[in-house]
Length: 61
Ligand SMILES: [Zn+2]
Image 1: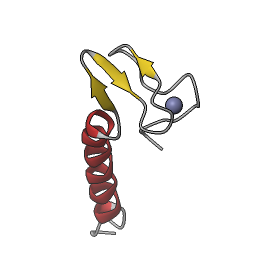
Image 2: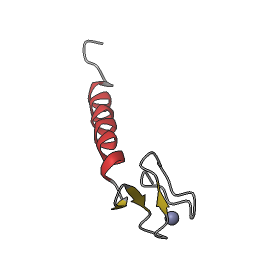
Image 3: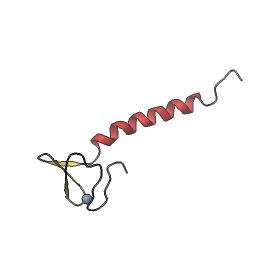
Image 4: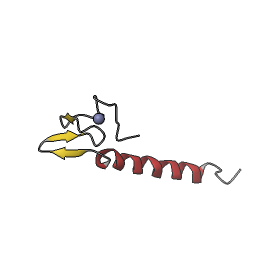
């Protein structure tokens, strides 16, 4: 009972979330002036876009 069987798992999961958080901003999008450009279909979106509304591409996937 003294040991914590979930300790290592929680730590790994926390690291996983940290890594994912960094990935969201740097993944995928290309930029054309102030626009985000989808690498799949070259559709342009404003900088607030989180996924492509033209083809459905999502940098988080
Ligand atoms: Zn697209």
